[in-house]
Length: 108
Image 1: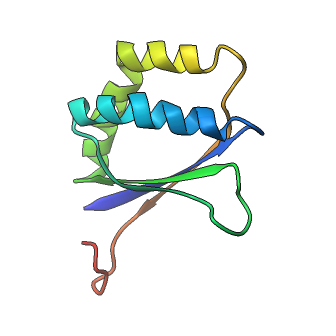
Image 2: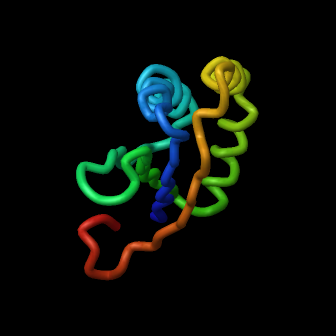
C-alpha cells in the first residue's frame, strides 16, 4: 500500500467552493472509480488557512496511474470542474507527495 498526500491550496475566498466540490461531486466520482480516500483535513491553526489536505491509498503506483487517468478523463469530473471554475480558478496550487509506510506504522 502507498499513500498519496495532496495539498490543495485554494485562491483567497475560494476554500468553501473547493470543499463543496469535494463534498458534493468529487467523492461520488471517486467511489464510482474505486479511488479510496483515507481522509481530508483543513488547517485548524498555523499556516495554510486556504488549504485542503487529502490522503488517498493505492495498491501501487501502477494502480494510481490507471485510476487517476480514469478520473481525469471522466466526463462528469470535467463538467463539474469547469462549472466550479466558471467564476475564476478555485485552486492556486496542488502539492503532491507519495508515502510508503514504515515497518512500525499503524497504517500499512
